[in-house]
Every structure is written in structure tokens, then in C-alpha cells.
Image (cartoon, rainbow over all chains, first blue to last red; front, side, top):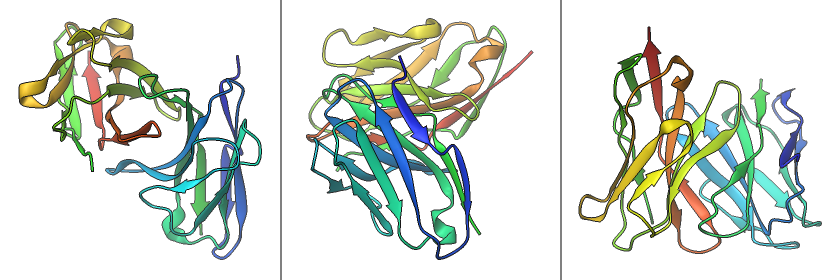
Length: 112
Length: 113
């Protein structure tokens, strides 16, 4: 009963470095999402995917790329990290509109 | 685009007192609405949801919310607060297709003895 698993849980990057955050779900959900959470701003959608091989931009996509090569995995990449990308990143998945999301436990990223 | 307004970034109550967390959404069409709870250093958990069935929705941990179309509101209540209810609460509304949710900025509930 793993649900949604995010790795890593914590990471510190230097400005300009790159990294990939991994999200894996074992519920056979079609829809997957990446959000970032910042104090006083709630959760903002970065990118999302409606199925294997598809991705789309959300509200704040700049500086991020995503891939969904397998249905169960949704990867979030930062090509050249900036301090403004210091945040907590949450992955979520869903099966249909009235279902709501199942969230992962988050990745706390600090860019120095 | 949909938007969600949560009045009050912090709400303080005493243990045993009524909890009322406010949420208003912008939509001319009845949406799907959700409340999530986030405990420190954890992900978000679904508390309850409105999906066009009963307007009074009961969730986990004794919370409930009432959908009022005329007021475009979906306020969260609990008759008697417990210390364990201290957390951050997020209201969310579905937007368009693809099951996207738009979240409010959150309300931190503080419960004092």
C-alpha cells in the first residue's frame, strides 16, 4: 500500500546544478501532477500528465521539465537550479475528477 | 480560471471550541471541492470532498463542510477542537478537465489547551 512515493526527501543544490525528482505511484492512476509549496502561496501546479507519454504545463512551469515514460513514474527535472526554486515539491496522482489527489510526502529542496 | 480564497492565514481556538475555516471559490458552475490537511513535514491528506451529491459533507476526524452555491462557499467546521487538529488546512477546487486542482493559500489552525 505504498501509494505515491517521492525520492529524494531532502536535497541541497548549488546554483546552476541539475537534478531529477522521482515520483512513483502503484495505484494505476492515469493523472499525475507536480506542485511546489511556498509559504503563504499554497500549492502551485508546475506540470502535469494525463497519461503515459504525455505532459503539459501548469501555472509555474519555467525552469522545470518533466517526463512520463512509464505510467507509474513522473519525473521532474531542474536543468540549472536557481535559489528561487528553493521549495517543497509534492507529487500527486488521481484517477478521476471527483476522486481528489493522493499526495506523496514531499521533497524539500534548497538551492544555495 | 478558478480561484480559491481562504480567509485567515492563521486561526487560533481553544481545545473544545468550535473550529471554522473559511473557503470561497470563483465559479459559475458548481465545481468539485476538497479540503486537505497537512501535518508538519508531511504530505496532504484528503479530509472531505463535495461532488454534487449532498451539500453537507462529512469527512474524517469529525470535520464537515457545507457547500453553499449562493455564497460560493465551502467552509470547514468541527464542533469541538482537539489538540491533534493543529495543522494546516487547504481548500481546493477542480478546474476544467484533466482533474487539475487549484489550491487556496492555506489556513494554519492553532489549538491551545
